[in-house]
Length: 190
Image (tube, rainbow, N blue to C red; front, side):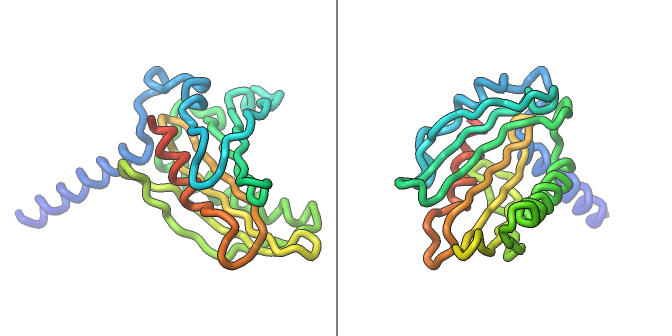
């Protein structure tokens, strides 16, 4: 009987964590995309908000907002993407495949541009009110210059949130890419 209670408790905890990871209800409860974009902060972990970039021409991309951030002198550049990928509601189970797709895209980007990037690490970055972002760091070179590219993906308010940071590859890092991703996702939750 105690085992049944523990399994039930574990299941309840798992369902509770899944709800925290999305921080959203059904599509009707979602914050409008413009309002979600407006929640993004003017500053995050040393990055300054620069500009909102135009959405794409396809119907899927029309429901996407991209906001650019940069550190002083543009040593590091961050992009924030809010989108639903055509889904009425992004669920926690949607994050892992989207994350894998974006990491693979980073590898393909390097093949097309002559930039050499290889995956160096992965980690879950916890958020202030529960849930986490899935993050990967790819490192390599753009020509002769060492570079680091980080991508993080999560779900906030029924949408995907993705951050991408590109900066020189050096030690110590030029910027706190994980801190940036965390601050952006926490702000997007409102």
